Length: 363
Image (cartoon, rainbow, N blue to C red; front, side, top):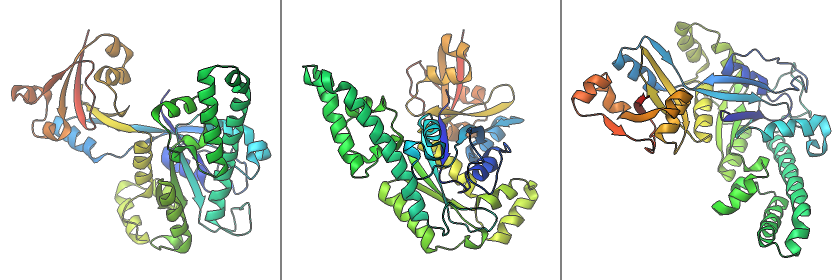
């Protein structure tokens, strides 16, 4: 399955608006809590200036960007870890994604209800994070109870796991998410089997009102400080406004951005950040008049990259002809680059680099 980023947050924090602006999926957006129950799933194109340059150099008429799989998950409320607001169901949806985009409401609107009277991003973040931590603590304690007997009767592996679970539980009690714990690779492998929610990488999305654009107010600073303290990413934009921008013609976008004093689209930055958060890189192909960007987990080999295109390519892999995108721009085709000796021939175990342009040979 493709890697996925899940959009989480309190009800009416703007999750579905962000999702729709990214994916153009048309998911329901309502001014009351729990309008989303089943998760919405869509794909968002990943902006990459290199793609247009490679396509132009290769004379490709069709351009296909890489995409990001996005899941819009219903809002969490206080008590979700023991079922409040269908919490168990929603936490299960969070468990299935690979990274989290935590939508935090900064905007005010009489038409969109909030779970409390006042907009308080620090408290909102604390509520969601506490529910994730408590859900993880319950999962750790269940596993601890299951293996306790075996650990005490001489099973060394279980004894070591029990020791680790005690360590993780103690840190969770101190409200430290798993992603911030100093675990060894072996410990991370053991813990990964529990699919803990706070082990997932996070980016905070400060959802602004139009009047807050361009201002570095106290609420925005609070979200930034929390993200910095956790080593998490952060982006800030008005989801509603940028959803409107998505409906404009290309020649109208620049005028719209200028009118609101927006230098660049926050949604594009958000997509790129999430792409990196998932540990993805991009390689390019330029076959049959199509220039395409392909997402690939960092550290993947050439044969795995071939499998992204088609399983037949992976099964019949012979070799990969590789050139960096910058070098490719100077040649414009594999034929020209090959004549100049600029193309490298790599085997199945070659580790693909971000920005490689690749031609696969297969039987």
